[in-house]
Length: 364
Image 1 (cartoon, rainbow, N blue to C red):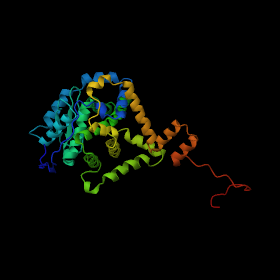
Image 2: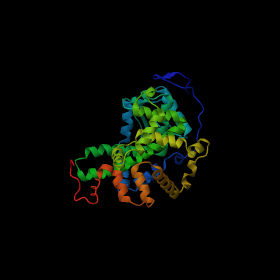
Image 3: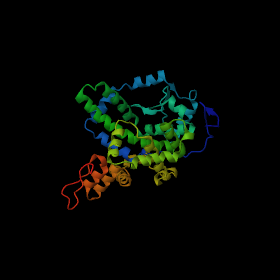
């Protein structure tokens, strides 16, 4: 563990005791939207066929050989501090088999967990150079959370289909079919990122480090110029600001992304860190894997539906407010929509005052 020396220019902090979660089920940290989006994805027409076909066709052995030959494998002799973090993360989340981890030369800060039979974790040099030890620990925990939840399989298929969609873009029907599945996969993966952020917090057990890491991913290595509270205020302004036009633009902006917006991730994680659910896990009260076989799918759906309903009710987004009003039977729906879209609807011309023969002309 760390003794206060430096790794790659980052000063390490003295090691501290972290809670461990023996036998923890992924149900403990998975976001309800993640589980429900995955269920919906599996029910998508044609997904099972594509999944089974790609499971046998994807060149996983080639993928492993590529990283082995052109990246640096983390071990006790290479990137030893990352190796310590990886083993520690697997110990805390009780992931028995430590997945291989590679550092890839790429200035863009990124990390991913991919693979079909067995997960592989890849982090870029841009990320390693950007984050300090505690921030990086949360990222490693994030990727181990993906591995424990079995997300690597779907992430690999998403990467392959995204590449395939570009190559067959000239085939109209083929591209439409692929993009339907890619869009559904992206929707699920954005939700899975919220789950993995929670896993990262369970591993790092330092919410401020998690916040700093997300801020750096958004704004670079300029912590002296940034403030966590101000960063979180951006998320609140993003959610509440504007009218229905902005709500539609938010949806259009997020559709091509594989990750949620960084301020939104920070706000979601901060909210979970302050919740009773998180505190119960930290106190040792959480669902175990041995209980997963007895877990009710209906209860999972009910929890997801309840979570969505709660999000809609509490949301400050104009579109979500409208949905909540419709569900609550609010009157004057047409008026609400017109006011929400503002400039998209023209105000009716003023009626002439009583006794006037005609409305005033321009310039009068």
